[in-house]
Length: 211
Ligand code: TYD
Image (tube, rainbow, N blue to C red; front, side, top):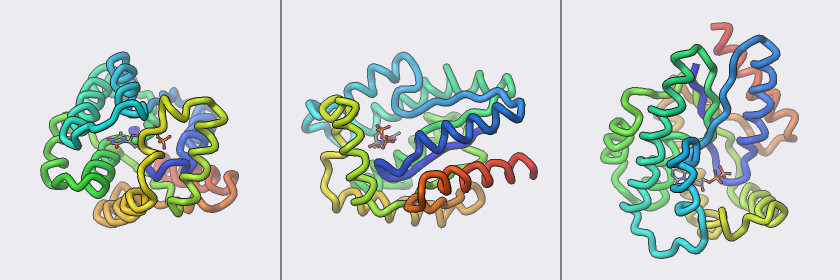
């Protein structure tokens, strides 16, 4: 089972993922928590480049290929081997982030992005994608506070520094993309109290496991 979490900055993905992982582990499942970018050794290097505010003037096409390189390595070195051992993989962002950020956000052609993603993922698409949907200004406020609290505003703040207009395109892009892929998407209202967001994620995953 391969489950991905998507959403704007600060939508609570990592907290929700950890809660879902706990429940799955209690049920006796092996669980791997991972993320993009940065889920492999190579990915760690790429993540530093991609998220550092010092990375300026990155061409959208170059940014795209760095995310794809991260994904191609992550799938082959980490995700596939785990799935082959029947481990449930929970991934913080995946191919949909590329369509949404590099497509709806940066303006690259979405058909082309889908083809690039296909090459990177080698046929591995999620069984379920949870979209934690939230007003971008609420998420951004949270994400900026988190970055300052964890002293990573410079190291990881490149996307948080984008305009509110960019983040609105991301939010709308996710909703449009989710509507096109209703078979695997479930939308979670991330403006609710965190416990409710977590409960909704857990219930959705449980119904998938039961089915
Ligand atoms: P991260 O710190 O993981 O963001 P968050 O905590 O909000 O999930 O940073 C990942 C950033 O990279 C995020 O701003 C979205 C961006 N991104 C892309 O633009 N394209 C991609 O394909 C992926 C995976 C992420």
